[in-house]
Length: 444
Image (cartoon, rainbow, N blue to C red; front, side, top):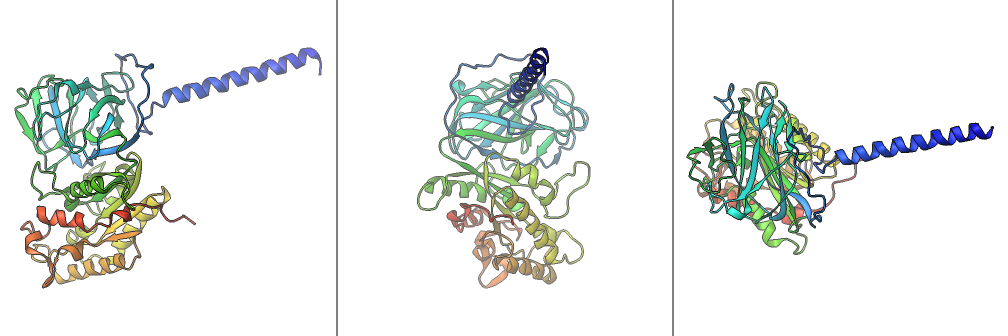
């Protein structure tokens, strides 16, 4: 090789190294810590505070709700020209916060020009603590366009989020973009106002009330109270459909209280709890449309469990609707096979899976002896340790000892299917908190 050829080869190698280094830099710069959730930014990019020191802690979920369908009546205009103030209740606190917005059921891009977060001045109210009001950005921009069928995570913002408190997340969209992606059975009143009232700290303009959560599907915090998230995946019983509105008496709320109070003692893990219940949900079947309203547990496992922030364990309470909502007697094997598939996929991500037995529904309009036989067969497999890593026996805890086909009278909301507040509390109290901790079995 001549000296000239040697210089040429060296120059080519250097050029290749520079190109690879540039590509690595671009890739790192593009990853803004969203954990894979797409950020669909627009113009008006605000400058970043690159000199600010990073806060210590762990990102965990402190609240969530599954997108369940398209809100009726919003097909054409969505919520154009209104500020939507979602009221959500936190589990653990943190020093920074970020949110996830979903346009899963939208048929056109959702243009959001203003988003804010604040701590509520009082529970169940639209007024904010003034010095906690923060404007949220998305990839540095105050405006974001969420494509139809997509979701987006905001940038993190510094704000002290207290544990066990109400938080207000407000969005404003000036243009029609329906239908609205929503969670219909919030058991929590949220609010709306005409015009852009996103950063109003008073509740004066928020005269409209709604029992839904709109667009908002998750609130994460940078927390020093928790090192991971537990996701509760279930149906209306997990959704807390008969619990007292605005009181946070779902079984998941009580479980979160128990974990928070006992965190760090014995084998109790320092985990937050988020609720991914959808009323009417089934393991196997799902609603109509594309994407499907009320998608099956198997369908939504990736979205609602595996993609949540820093998940360590999942609690599954599904199967009753598979039995009640099918005309013929559903085969218990199809239900347990579906549950095992969910467990297998959770194990592939290293998650621990705790499963619940199915509670009785004697006296409910859907009750029959054949359906109850299916329920008992499913429970037998669960109790035998053939489905989950650990079992929480909701059936044993709430069934009437004198008539095990029915709920105990004081645990029954009155419809003979859903628990009362007392029943939800009893469900949470039978958890062995240590069962939530531990690695999933190795995949061989």
